[in-house]
Image (tube, rainbow, N blue to C red; front, side, top):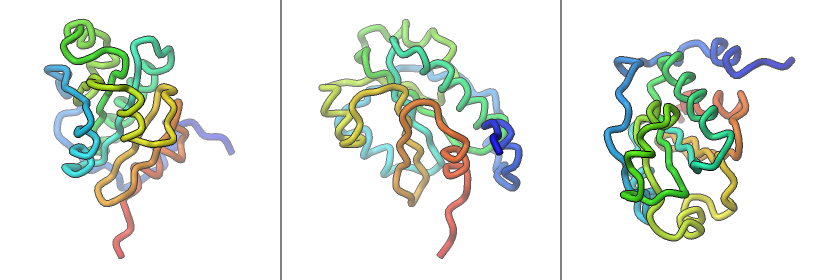
Length: 165
């Protein structure tokens, strides 16, 4: 049986934890994603988080970011969406990065600062730079990495609470 991502999300009862207003404000600035950022994000993780690594030239990234933002907000899931731009450095064109609608739906917006291959390796040593590249993060769980648009099972795994031992 083939089901769409939206149909799958409607089948996941009990996940609506709410996080306040679903129409959150756009990111107020472009933050630096450097060699320390990935570890800091994971260490300070309080909410389920999806990090979308994108590039300004990526034809699929806008739709993936917008679909994920819509899924998070429509399900009142309580997760957050972070967008990381790999091909524009912080301060290089912050105003330009803040304009596109797909970056405005993110909770936070980052830009790579440093050697892109080293930053990719720090996130996932097997990642070769394809975009969109997604990292599904949950407190207390290992990251789940996906290249390209996520499949329904990726979203289900991310949105399903961890079993208490």
